[in-house]
Amino acid sequence: MIVRSLSAIENSDRTVAGETWKSRRLLLSADGMGFSMHDTIIHAGTRTAMHYRNHLEAVYCIEGSGSILLVDTDETFPISAGTLYALDQNDRHVLIAETDMRMVCVFNPPLAGPESHDESGCYPLIAETP
Ligand code: 9YT
Image (tube, rainbow, N blue to C red; front, side):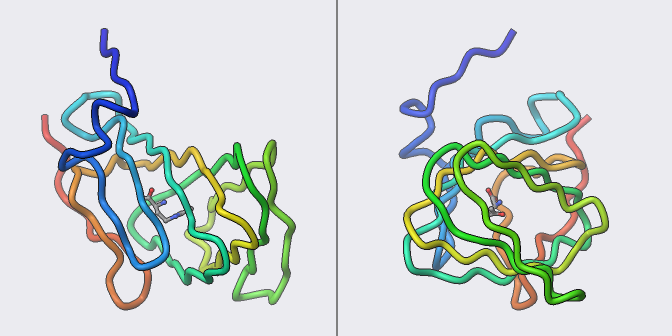
């Protein structure tokens, strides 16, 4: 069994920051679960354009509020604590944070650890640790 707290990983290489977000990676590919799970903060007043072409991501908002713009259809959906979105079509999207937003993010396949967004808002595919 794995037991791991946010405080234990906060100042470790399991914490990765982008310009608009900070991701605390509670589970990674080496943990052998088949998915990764992150506790992520999106900073208030920011817009983050993302396109996870190599991964499926589900995001459950547990604090804060904002909205998500689905780029291909130009639809916008409000997101606040208690709402989930799942990018089941590898959708291009823009996350607009009105307040700090705290999100539980799950990636399939799992991230390996150091991934950060490239210029298109994508993470590279790093081979899963057996
Ligand atoms: C909500 C979202 O996708 N934020 C960007 C960070 C990423 N999800 C991560 O690695 O936790």
